[in-house]
Image (cartoon, rainbow, N blue to C red; front, top):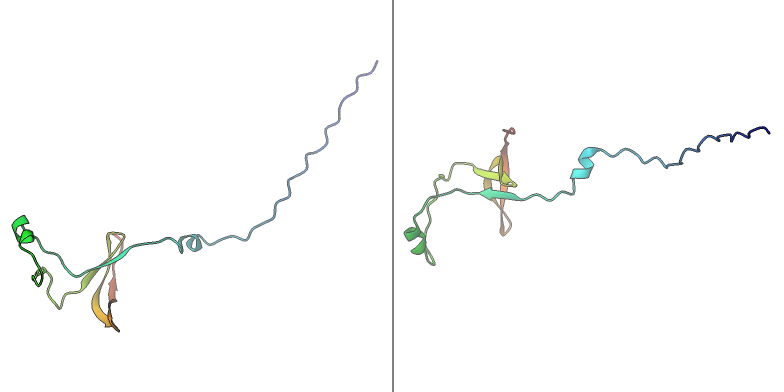
Length: 100
C-alpha cells in the first residue's frame, strides 16, 4: 500500500493596509509642558517670612534691566523681558538658550 504524502499549500500573507508614515515630531505636538517666567529670586530666613504681611515688599536679586528666566518643565530654556498685553503680563523672548 502506497503512503499518501500531504502536500503543503503555501501560507497566504495577511493583507494589511499601509498607513502613511507619521513624522515623529507630529507625535510630540500634543505633549503638555509647563512654561514658567521667573522674575527673580531671593533668600530669606524663617523670621523674614514670618514677618511678611499685606503690602510687604520682597526685593529680588535681579535688577530691572536684567532679562527674566523662562523655564520649560523646570529647566532654563530662554530669557526675555516682561511686557503687558492688554490687562495681562506677557514675556517677549529675547534669547533661546542652547541645550546644556
